[in-house]
Each structure stands twice: as structure tokens, then as C-alpha cells.
Length: 456
Ligand code: TYD
Ligand code: MG
Image (cartoon, rainbow, N blue to C red; front, side, top):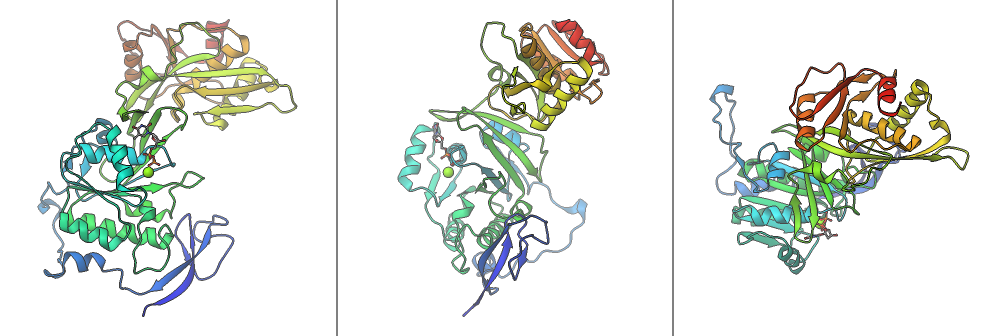
């Protein structure tokens, strides 16, 4: 009989402690330790060994010279979804363990069921959250063949692994890792010990069999993946599915990728037929109104490796109550405060007595500082109630002294703006010289200069 004991685990970093503490000694977070039952037994460690090498004995590995390693073992397979291929760095690598995190209802199950139905090879879709009928109902809405997709509603790790070994599918999807549990461990599914153990077993399974495994992970209120950070260390790729529940656009970002860049980004729209790839994101991020309205300006940002034009909207009104309100959607609120302070100091604009609301159209979050200049223009445009032309766009960062700084990939940005029919673009004077037919590129060096040129 295996012994059980009580231990405390940090939900942020996975640190184990024999007693409860207010502050985690490993990561320094407060109030993150939770109580769990753990089993002192090594019986769970060799689950895969038992299953895989039941007859053949433990496979031995030997040190190999770098140049002697045969390529092709990490071959990538096409997911039949251009956007997903892009974030994975060119396709799903065999033997890899991928984790997709996101808030409830964002579309994780839809995305992966779509992948399972379109993959074109045998897929085992393990669901611990929904019944077969529920999944079938969802599948009816999605276009895809689905003739090689097996649905398996099971939550026991040993059952899932032995079934997977029997079937040898080309891909395994686990919806979700929080529902899977190893019967040999006494803590409940979803607890840190279980998540850690099951993820480690799937990792081992993927490496031994060369079958890629995709896990769905829930995220906590704070936006981190539920379960300790160690989960992110075990897996090869971490994708984050985000978006505004009230908006149809969804963004899939790579936050870790052992086989490619983490700069990539995929954009989907969720409609009646599932998730649809957005091939031309710029068109959706600019509002369709024909009128010239004050408080809007178009920025050319680069997310991942793609340029996209997006509209920034600002509303500036006199403050009624004591402290002015500042609110930003899709843009860093601290950066907004910094920009308002720079505008007040350099251009003498009275933002200190105004409420300021800022919004990026489409419900998308952008961290590229190149949208600063468009934010500035939208703010001044709203403050002074002067609209700027619809054919102008901006790409530059603002410094604390009011200087207009250059941003990378400027040529790509100007080309994208020209392609979408913009005739004037303001960029930093310190950018390399660019000539693109059909668009007039204006160079500026100071905030005061652009203020004079557009609103003067
Ligand atoms: P789901 O994949 O269940 O989210 P998650 O697994 O991340 O919790 O997505 C659920 C939402 O997606 C649900 O609110 C309905 C919506 N949806 C559509 O709009 N169209 C569709 O074709 C499908 C399948 C779902
Ligand atoms: Mg789901």
C-alpha cells in the first residue's frame, strides 16, 4: 500500500513545501500555496515504460555525434490550417507536445476539433469535458471531413495511453489536461500533482512514439495557465488563444516554441461555421465608416512578422469628477499615461483636466510601439475635434522627450499601407529612405512638428 502525505504546492511555480506559507520561497508570490494529497510511490513514474516496452524491454539510447544524427525525425506535418501552421513555425512537429491555453468559451475545443477533422490522418480526440453527442453537434457546424477522427470520452490517463498505443493515431488531442487524472495518484484531476504528472507522461509518450500530442489548458482569472508554470517548461510549444468574447476576432499567439519563432500570430474569426482564417487582417481592423470623424487615426503595426493596419480611436472629454479617468482597450494603460504626459509637456495640451478613453478597433491587443504616433494623433484629434483625412496613416514610436523614433520593418509597413490605398504615411525622420509608388512618405523628427503640420 502506497503511503500518502499532505504537501503544499505553489500554483505559480509548482514549488513543493511540507507546510503552508504565505509567501512562496521559490518564486516570491503571495497566497499561492495550496494543499494537496501526494502519494509516496514510484509506481506512476514508469507508466509509459510499462505500456510501450512491455515485451521489448527498455529502449536504450547512446550518445551520438551531432553530425551523425539522422534528420527527418522531427518532420513537420501540415495541419491544413495556414494560420495554425504559421504559429507552429511551419506545421506540427512529430513527437512534439503542444499546449493551447485560453479562457473558457474562446474556441479552444472548436479550433482543435476543426484540426482533428481536417488533418487527413487518424486523429484521437480525447474529451473529458463533453459527451460524444455534444462533440458531434459541434462537428456538424464545422466544415471538414472528419472520417478519420475518433472521439474518445475518457479521463483516466492509463486508459488513454493504452488506447493511444493500440490505435497509433497520427495525432492525439486532449481536451483538457485539467480533466485527465492518473488513478495511481490520490489527488483529484486538475490538481497540480495530477497536471504535472499527466503532462510529463504525455511528453514521454510523444517522444517515445513520435506521435504529436496537443493539450488544451484552462487559464486562471489572472490569465496564466492553470497549473504551475512547470507545465510550460515540460511542453515544447505554448500557444495562447485570446480575444474578446463579444467580438468575433480571435488571436492565436506563440509564447514558447522549441521548433520555431515566437513572433508569429494567427487571426481567426468565429462565425456560424467555426473558426475561419483571416487572410487579410488589415481590412477588418479599420472601421468601415465613410464619414470623417474626429478622434481616429490609422496605425501600421507589425505583429509577428506581418504588417497590419489598425484604427486607433480616442475620446477626450472634460473631467466631471475630481480625478481624470484613463481607460485603454488593446493598448497598454501605462503607455497611454506616458503619452498624455509627453503631450502636455511638449505641446502644452490640457490632458490633465480631461477624461481619456482609447480603443483599438477589432478588440485586438497590440504591443508594437509603432502605434504610438497614431494614438497621439487620435488623442489630439478628439481633443480639438478636428478630423484628419482617411488616407493618412502613421508608424512611429514616441520618446519621453517628444522625439519621433524609427521602428523596424518600415519598408514592409509602407508597402502594406500603399497596398491598402493610403496616400500619405508619417514615419520617423531616422528611418531608412523608402520609395514606394503610390504613397507619399513624410518624415518627421519631433512631436511639435507633426502637431503643427496636421493641426497647426
Ligand atoms: P469552445 O470551442 O467550446 O470554447 P472553449 O473550448 O475554449 O471553452 O467555443 C465555444 C464558443 O464558440 C461558443 O460560445 C459558441 C461559439 N461557436 C461559434 O460561434 N460557432 C461555431 O461554429 C462553434 C462550433 C462555436
Ligand atoms: Mg472546450
